Length: 326
Image 1: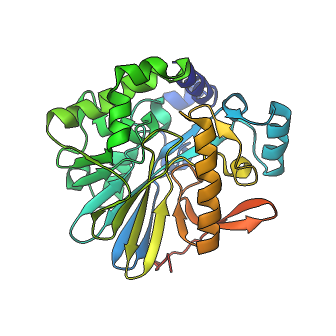
Image 2: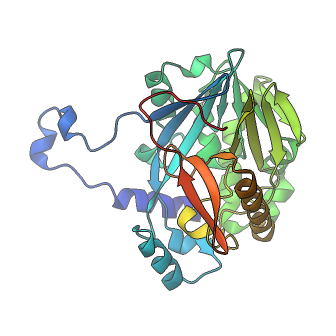
């Protein structure tokens, strides 16, 4: 697949071989070139929310973003202090309600190579394990959200039911939809089906029509465009609220000031932009806590009005497990 090839090339270019001397002895912790398993925990009312990093991957935004030329995009990234092919976070969100352990997004698994697929290890570092998850909610079926559902054809979350919008499942299982999709999207269908099939065979796939309440305090909201059944999840406990926004934002430093700029991954770019414009206005007016799967880890913060566009205000880091979403 063209897009996967581009991403893999970007990842490979960022991975330099170790010197020969370093390969002859064990690498100490101080010499490691990767971060420790990334998780960050907050309280949302009575719900314990743990943000989990599946990894980060370089993205060639100059090739993928539509609506501005490469020179303009480079300048916008430069003003933010980042290169045009900067890395992006792949974040998942574990909601422990006391009755359920609900994981929102399953990460990329092995699809992008060694950069990602760290979710199971991160879960364990946070005191959980894949077998302890009883629900996985997918905002959509793209590989960086569903690829971590399986490993070598086996279910990574053996005790979990997988929830997604009915329109989303229908789209990815449709041969007619695959035939109509962009050439750059063709392999996404194979990846999505591979991720979902083991759960479907086990009778663990569940679908919904949004808007709907899935569990007490967990509500699905339709947000189409990026994919036909793309969904948000609104999480609420005792008046504390958080919205997981899926993929309406890929490059915050670009798409917040220019919500009209789309990305090649969008199934319907015009509708994706329309959904983004409406959602950003709503989030800024409500000052609702936002959880962004592709906003720099842990991806928790608020959208605020800034001139004709918006800006991202991350919540302050705290060593305490504090209340958020008020």
